[in-house]
Length: 358
Ligand SMILES: Cc1cc2nc3c(=O)[nH]c(=O)nc-3n(C[C@H](O)[C@H](O)[C@H](O)COP(=O)(O)OP(=O)(O)OC[C@H]3O[C@@H](n4cnc5c(N)ncnc54)[C@H](O)[C@@H]3O)c2cc1C
Image 1 (cartoon, rainbow, N blue to C red):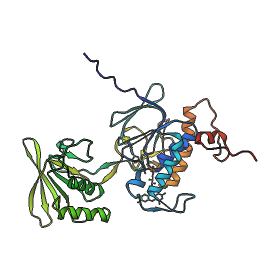
Image 2 (cartoon, rainbow, N blue to C red):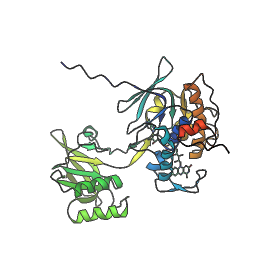
Image 3 (cartoon, rainbow, N blue to C red):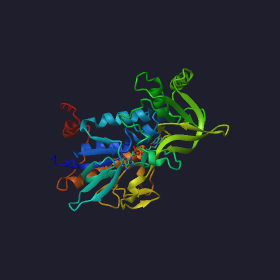
Image 4 (tube, protein in one colour):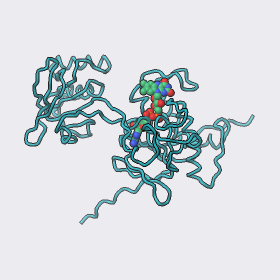
């Protein structure tokens, strides 16, 4: 008889950063300079927080030393900056539980079952986890994970399936085209893209490809709104929809993919017993520590007198929180201030050469 599988051992880390937005990324850099090992968790499957999710191609003009950069460029630069510290990222999972242990460290759990044991936690959770906007129809919820998906899981078979895709953004069009243009035996039987109006929020060339696929009858687009579901023998068999003219009909389906964008939800961190004001974590302005010693909060998620939700303010907060976290991780060590310009130790950590003395 095989022994039951052992649960994976917890991941030990000096610091766990919750949130890989610009401030969480810079937090990893500042901790790295102080030799505090950090790991990063984010509920999005990619890094960059609001900069990538909300305005990747818009210009930012108030990052010190950069005349202008887009959200995407800022995140790219921050990722390059932290490369020397080889910070592990755990993406596509939400931190859902934090508990203090008897030894003063913290147990941290994620929605994918990861278990971290951390000496310090830095919450850089911004405006909360970005979670998919749900399609709310009575009875639909119970089909999530079998016929209803907000993120397409790897290996999902579309072969011979009637697929309805709800949405008008890049993800909706991308999946519609992937399925419509697939020319293999595993292709879907029928692909329908549905949005309440014939307006698309995607690159013009993608919209043109979608129109071309419709003209070639590889897929169809309908402007309609879902009003209910139909079930047959416990399975989701159709979506009741109302068209622009108010006419009701049923779209038969086997799989329903919903891409209505993401919206931030404060989520589980409001239940961790930390002092909050207006959905923000209250911190001091010396250490950026919350009401729970060892748990720090930086960036858009925190509040203090004079708080400004700006990236540059988050960078300052991350710098001071790093010193406070380092003092906790190395209680017997002095934490001196060193300049990256002149410190051979920092040059070693950054993997750069120390200039020869003149
Ligand atoms: C349109 C727009 C333009 C802007 N322009 C500027 C500008 O020009 N200059 C400027 O300074 N600021 C600007 N801002 C504000 C700036 O984007 C924010 O101040 C900044 O993103 C805050 O960074 P952050 O790292 O604190 O949080 P965020 O960028 O919000 O990142 C937080 C991350 O934490 C993750 N997360 C949250 N909870 C959890 C959890 N429980 N588990 C796992 N992950 C979690 C989220 O998924 C997210 O990725 C702009 C904002 C918007 C919306």
